[in-house]
Image 1: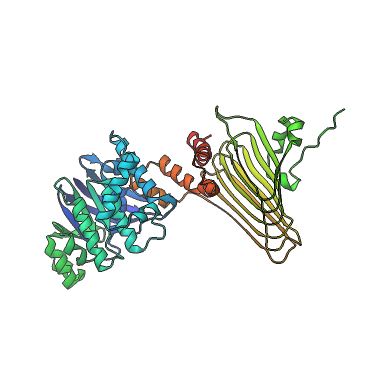
Image 2: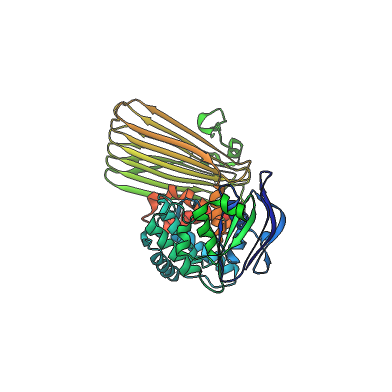
Length: 249
Length: 257
């Protein structure tokens, strides 16, 4: 699914990723944990093609394609979804309009027929129900006036509608209360837990991993993956902290 | 013998940012041609004005000069899109009687090196009248959008509620907008609000939209549509006209003229 090799990337001339190597096969949920400033969000943005995040070395292959050659919107059509730590507000554009345009743009790029208004609303309603988000929220402008938790749930509704093969979720659990965390976690399971899909889950906390059970956990530190293990690695981190676990490694 | 008409220059306040050279191409008759709209007491009048070039870029100058007189409790709603011409200009002089309302929603859109402008004078001559003007300008190339809005509020016009909002969106370096709000208020119990701002597309919003699959062209179109939508809020009850005006503006953007 995703193969990252010796990835180096910088922002404004400062190198943040320093030779990151990571492979995620189909069907895997891979959690990335790491101290603040390790480069977790940078990794998400580099994979999402954000302008200003410059790859200086290395390669990223997504389903056999050179991902770094693709524009951000082309990556989306190819099946990538980036869940934002801070979802962006778009005044004047409703969720329904935005997501219908986005889904149909992706379908067009893949040579599929666009969904009609009715078909789209049915799909949106189903996914909103899954995330327990009121359909009225989707008629409002994108993320405008949403609480932190609503924004994160709306991100997952977007993911459900767009139905990607690979989701990179950047601290999707931050800002969620306990109930919302469970709803979002179960949403991730329902949408992404499948043999032909994969998830790169960036998180600080074990709480989300209690709901979304990772197949693998990697620790990102100073721009590189320093350790990879099973779900128990996250538990050890929670108990002992980064310093102790990395020292032992 | 016909009298020669002295064309304005940029020294005239109302033509300060205009393309006065373009006026030379006009018939003198067209320049003097003011259209009068009288709305009797209690009645409502609505009109949509469009200046566009349907067959590629045009070098014509198009001038609309309106004089609106509102009776007691009357209402006039004007919506306009200026999307073309070497110079496209809509001028409106409105006089409001007691309790009447004037609504203007205007959009200027386009590139090249042409000027598109709304110039208004809203005279609150009696108490309790209200007015609301919303102008949105989207330009690229060396295109210019102007809004010169004057509000006069005479000493008797107590309880006037007048509002003016201008926002410019510049898609490329080289484009410009000018906003000149001018408020002359002689009554002491009135509300006169005005605001003007200019900015560029929100690049973070565009990136967010790209990660959902929208091409740069599509995200720009959606954001521009949202931006100019403010000017057409008052037209929301007429879906067909709302759609027509929006389409004129967005077609202009798509063709990038």
